[in-house]
Length: 275
Ligand SMILES: NC(=O)c1ccc[n+]([C@@H]2O[C@H](COP(=O)([O-])OP(=O)(O)OC[C@H]3O[C@@H](n4cnc5c(N)ncnc54)[C@H](OP(=O)(O)O)[C@@H]3O)[C@@H](O)[C@H]2O)c1
Image (cartoon, rainbow, N blue to C red; front, side):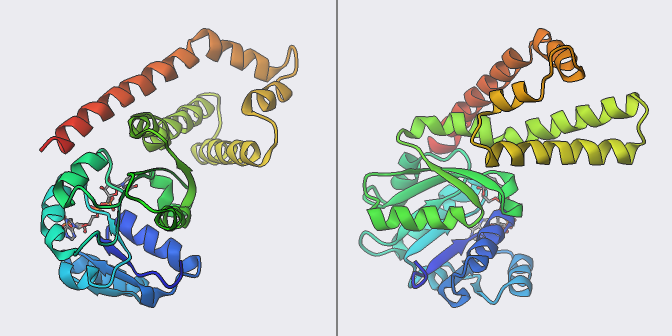
C-alpha cells in the first residue's frame, strides 16, 4: 500500500482530509499527488502537507495507481471527460467520493472497462471519525479493493456494499445522519436552557452526552437497546422521558425522515448520473 501512488483531484475539505488521514497513517507524502484548479486550494495543501500539488491534470495522474475524484458532483462529468484520454489501457483504480454519482455514469464517462470504486463518506471524516460505505465494480481487483478500503479507513470506519442500490440508504443513514444528530443535540440544548441551565452549560452537557453515549455504544459488546434498558430504572427519570419520546412517535419519525432522504438520493442520482 505505502509504495502506491495516490492522486487526488480536488483539494477541498474531503480531499485534504483524506490526504491528512493517509499521512497520519504513515503513507509517505512523496507517494501522494494532488491537483486543484483553484490556486488558493493548492496554497492550503502546501501549507498543510509536503505533497506535490499541481494545477495540471496530466501531471497529477501520470504515475497514479489510484485516482481519487474529490470534486463536487456537478463538476464530475467534465472532469471525467478530460481525464479519460489521459489514462491508458485499463489505467489506475478510480475512487470517487462524489455523492450521488453512480458507477455506471463514471464508467460511461471514463470508459466501460475502468475499475471504479464509489465511496460515500460523511462529514465527520473531516475530523477523522467518518463512516464510509464502498461499492466496487466487477473490474476492481482484490488488491484495489484493499487500497480503496485503506484510503477511506484513514478517516474513519468503512463498510462494503454488495448492491449499489444500497448507497441511497447509506446516504439517508450516515451521509445525512450527522445533521439529524446535530438537530437532536440542538433540541436537548434548548430544552436544558428552558429548564434553567446557562447556555454554555446546556451546550457542553448536550455535546458530551452525545459523544459519551456514542463512544460507550461503540466500545460495548451490548447493543444500544440493551444499553438503553440498563440506564432506565423502573419508575425513574429516564423512563419518564423515554415514554414521552416513544408516545410522540420518535421511531416512525426517523423512519419517515430516512425514507424521504433515500427517495431524494435516488432522484439526485438519476439527475446527476443520467447525462
Ligand atoms: N465535505 C464532506 O463532508 C463530504 C461528505 C461526503 C461526500 N463528499 C464529496 O466529496 C466531494 C468533494 O467535496 P468537498 O466538500 O471537498 O468539496 P470542495 O470543498 O468544493 O472541494 C472540491 C475542490 O475541487 C476543485 N475542483 C472542482 N473541479 C475541479 C476539476 N475539474 N479539477 C480540479 N479541481 C477541481 C474545486 O475548485 P472550485 O471551488 O473552484 O470548483 C475545489 O477546490 C464532493 O463530491 C462531495 O459530494 C464530501
